[in-house]
Amino acid sequence: MKKFKAIIKDRFFNRTKQLREQAFEIRDHVIRIEDDTYFIAKAMIPDIPDILNVERSVYEGQTPWDRTAFANELRRKYDRLYLVIRYHDRMLGFIGASFDDRSKTAHITNVAVVEDKQNRGIGGYLLDTMIKKAKYIGYQKMTLEVRRSNLRAQALYLKLGFEKTGVKAHYYFGDHEDAIDMTLDLTRGD
Image 1 (cartoon, helix red, strand yellow):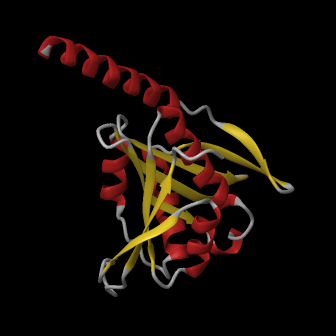
Image 2 (cartoon, helix red, strand yellow; image 1 turned 180 degrees about the horizontal axis):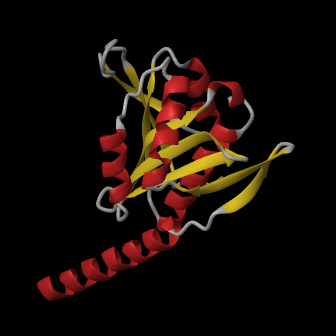
């Protein structure tokens, strides 16, 4: 019986691994959101300076994650996926997620869109892309944290089906603002 369980477990994890590898294969491509055309690609190490610039534009000149943190994330190709979106040569936003096969949970680690391009569907597109990838792999839920004061982001997450599931008191470095935990049930129908 132990051998049988081991075989089933091995096949299950190998299938999940194959699906994840397929989902993580991103071909650089052009997309249309509303009336604009954008370029989307898998983030790479050379993108880090632009990613940091997006962070600075969103976080009042600060970079909550530094170059080393992003480099470490981008090197973890087996359980991390980061995408960038550009308009011509300007990076407008990025999204990152971690994928945990054991818990069948994807976690949005980062999502940001430069302030002058917010409310144009870019953030929603990036989130929807990650949601589709997590569903493709067969994951059951997606989680994220959002600042208590970031009501626009919370509204977007709620619109996409996320639910508020808790609070992490004094979560954010520096100002110690609370984080709202949010979860999306990926097993529900669209």
